[in-house]
Amino acid sequence: MSFFFLHGILRRPVRFFRPAFFLAVLLAASCANELPIEPEVSEFSEAGIKLSVEAATFRPTVLGRSDTFALSIEYGDTVDMVLLLSLDDTSHFTVSPDSFTFSKKKKTLDVTLTYTPAGIDQADLGYLVLITHNPPDTLAGAVDTLGVDSLRLSGAGSGQFLDLELIFVRGGTFSMGIDSAAAFKDMDKRDQWGEHTVVLSDFFIGRYEVTNLQYYEFWTEVKPDHTPLDSSITGSWPQVALQQPNFPVVGVNWEDATAFCSWLSLRTGELYTLPTEAQWQYAASGGQNRQYPWSLVGDEPADTLDPGPLANTFKSGDGYTFTAPVDAFSAGASAFGPLNMAGNVWEWCLDWYDKDYYRADYETWIDPQGTQVPDNFVFKIVRGGSWFESVSQASCTNRAALSPENGELNTGFRVVRLP
Image (tube, rainbow, N blue to C red):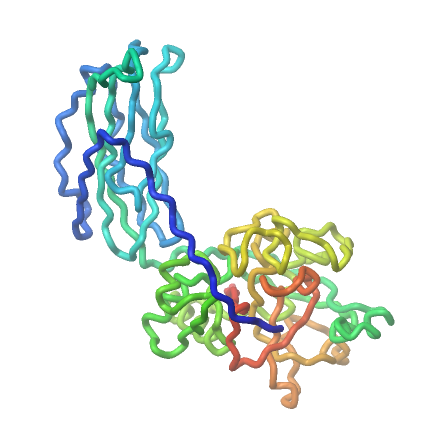
């Protein structure tokens, strides 16, 4: 495992185009159940148009994710008319479509409003302004406005931890390790040599890697302890938690990850932990003999396999220079449902690393917890590869080790909850 420091390029969001005739109304207020906004007197009735609601209130939404609201607009038989929709706040709200020419074929226009919060526990308020006008006879003709109305908008960013989604994994029996002379001779696979049958109990595992925002909630209660590394790649903590809330937290060591699990256990009353190496591989492979989460059972792609849109690995053309959002690459998900178990970031496991562990003489391997030999309590297991390694390092079976005190910029984690 390795990493390097580069200067990243920040991409600024494209601003929404505002029509010249629109006068923006900027509103700011504290959190409230009801918007302190008086709606304009509707002139839509004169234009033969009717709104289904007077206000759109979005669900409390975690940073990095969005909520949508479906709006229905009904109209009569008038056809020579154009509807324009404009937002006074385009940093939080978007609308699609933003214009519409009426037709006799359809009496209802369905509009989708989207809200994306930028702060936690902060109310975002605004207007969707709807203007109807007759199309001008010529390009130089004046616009004849027929009706104006507005729709009140409100949303709030959520500081709740309810966004941590878990997948139930039914326990079972599967095979770990490789039983072949070729594997023993391959230095990269020698620690995988020694095929053995493992029996696992049921467990829950995170659909996604733990995000910057989720870790930020933990960090705000324990700071300055367990602070992730800063770098030119990841940015400065905690700013990066709000700038890239839906990206995996990186630069955290094994002790940081286990402290997060302990905090989550106390907060929820459930037992959270890091996955054991066996749980991790079982979830990544779908409990079958898969080389990669997306592979066919028994399929063994070449090391030069280009995963394309299936995983975030080095020089794979996946569209990301460093980490990717935790919900990217859904096509490369495990058969059980977790995403990014190949690539993106190495993931901490609970076990100590022992290169000879698979050859241990156990009668049964039931819910194994890793080596119990104190001499091997030096490195912890990490699995899954990262944005900095080739796809061959991201296989379901590849084992790697890292000192538990080290936090690297291509290493994160996901959680397991025990029933």
